[in-house]
Image (cartoon, rainbow, N blue to C red; front, side):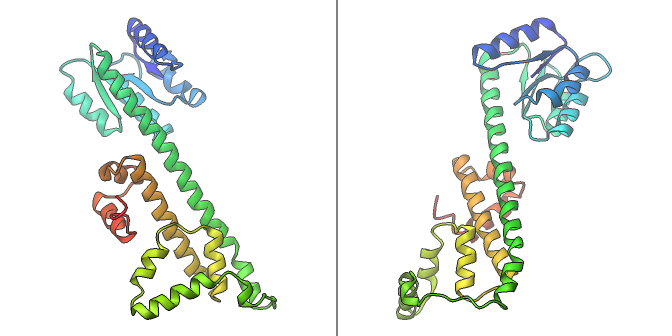
Length: 261
């Protein structure tokens, strides 16, 4: 979406975006752009900060962010508008490009904005998966309680695949330490099914313990994916996850991800 009261600028930006494979929509009025935003749902917005009418660029930026806080907004500003640009960045603008617009500057800003949009969508998907995981575990509460009242016939241990577990326990006894075993077991995230199965196998029907284990595994997987997406840019990862840089460093160490880098 392009929002600029200068029709010639709108024409220029439309041609610029079409050449790069985008399908732009342009508006010369901030009011109209905000009204149409929900219906059009653009992947990004290029917005002129200084616009006449009832709504200026800053007000339009605030409105866009209220509707969709993850949408990247690139603001355009003429020379001598430093204060306005600072206000725009505080309102959540992804980047700014000075007028007259340089093609290279806009290309860089647009590429960064589209990457930010992609990461935001992936984070939202992962968060939804975590919520679904926790809900699925919570829904098993009745099952775990019923296990105390229902007699389930299990095949002999020799017919179940527990040899690996037995070997791990023996190794822990011989080594006199569980640290190497813990490290080996933590190399990959467990699935919800494996977590529940392992708990039931051990006779642990505590929903709180299972929820904590699942949440810890989901958190580790989310942090690792975001670190890989950002090529281990810890500052960018912390911003995407909505936590402080210091907190991210702690969680990386806690989950053993510092060695994975």
